[in-house]
Image (cartoon, rainbow, N blue to C red):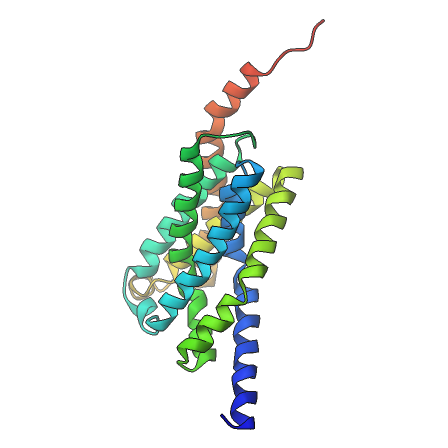
Length: 234
């Protein structure tokens, strides 16, 4: 490999890393919300597994993603999944961070994997373009992004522990992502030709709907915790 080829390889690798760092925020947010109610040890395992899964899935999807998003209903179904996951992780993230059942850990992992599959499709197209089809370059560039996803996920989860309102903001952001995916599906674009106003209003509606649905679904758990909380002696 000549000097110019090495330079080009390193430049392409750096481009992929920067792209992935910029686009990995959604995945880090899902991971953080999914593991927030887990105890410390399970949270670390969940973050590490989720970050590694996100990168592996992006490598696999990138290899054959060139035409994937041009298929009708792919983004529509993916966006619906993101909205469903957003409601689920909002309800779980609203729970207290006390030792939950093991089934909760497995459920959090499932949410992370499913969200990675649906939310990575847009991201991998930019990576695929920067890699020029070099599979090893894709794997190397995305693999180096694991520390960033781990750090961002832990940071977001820690901030949500300290500031509960960030859970609402995170759910709203995931709602926006899901709404945007659905409105930009090729079938929807051909059928109704959504303009900017409809796109922005739909994203806002999805964000608000997720927060409202999450509040309603988590109300029984919140009420049960309030009833179980010890009362102060008079």
